[in-house]
Image (cartoon, rainbow, N blue to C red; front, side, top):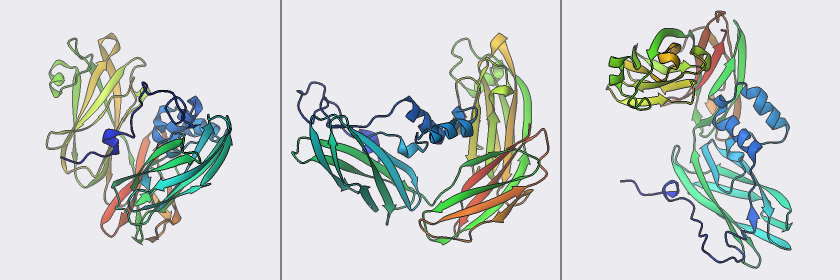
Amino acid sequence: MSPADPFDFGAGHVDPSNRVHKGSAFQPGLVYDAGFNEYLGFLCDAFPEVYANPSATCGTLDSAGIPIEAHDLNLASIGVAELAGSQTVTRTVTSVARGNRTLNVSVDAPAGFDVSVSPSRLTLRQGQSATYKVTITNESATIGEWRFGSLTWTDRTGLYDVYSPIAVKAALFEAPAELLRSGESGNVSFDIKFGYTGDYTAAAHGLEPATVTIDNVLQDGPEDPALFSPSDVATGGANLHQFVLSGAALFKIAMPPEATEADADLDIFVYDPSGDQVASSTAGGTNEEIEIFAPADGTWSVYVHGWAAPGGDSNYDMYSWVISATPGGNLSLDSAPTSATTGEVATIEASWTGATTGQWHLGAVSHSDASGVFGLTLVDVDNR
């Protein structure tokens, strides 16, 4: 059994029965405001697939001064899930305390990290806001492990202690997970930020045209259509599609909204060669996507489930790609760094030719150190 951490027990609890006094939940001293637009900006980073045109929507929010990085959502809690070297987080507080208040910050840094706050002192009147920045730097933290700490703003009277938990996980690198493009030929350029010092190699894989599986699935049920089981195949409430994989860097399945009827809600479940369910996509409506990195060799089972099929059945097109772990194809690297230095930002440039019109292609730029591949940046070229 693993010891509990702040993700298990949280940052504390609210006691609504406590009497009203300075520093209580009813008179907190400082508040962190985040409205509807701020959460839209958060989605740009955390779940960009919710937008039909992420670049347009998020560009508009960015130009309006709305943060579009998940770690900059204006919450009291501070979290950085993939910190490569160093990361600066921005927060804005508003005073709800009467009169003028001067507050000083104290920091309990997560183990292995340095945390600095600028400015370290705030003087605010009631209703006034101020922005501060928190810079978190990995000094000795283990890659891939969550570490926890906090910062607290305290006023000179000691009446207010405004606490912010910090959770941070060190990463080997920071780079885009996926780049969306189109065109028979074209190019991409993106930055990579390193969280280590040592060997580094980039390589190009693909592009691979999608395999399109065309089929029809029945409405599952009526006993419980939301409960999927592989046995639903026997009644037609689910379809089984099998893929034999060998030496793959990535296995991806997608079913966008236009791939089935407008009111259909189809889901996808994936089982590995040992028969274990390892992934699922159950979005509201049909907008499914699953990515399996470094899939094991063998036969993979993909089930399309008829959670809601208008009229009793739904036609669908399921797109799938297998990206080889061996570099090669019509995606080529034009420029890439040959070594990594902690905190350094470098640019990778790649280009492609021969992406057939009318098809959806997928490739990847792999990122490797002396131990092998540790990440992929996907290049999605949709020419449909």
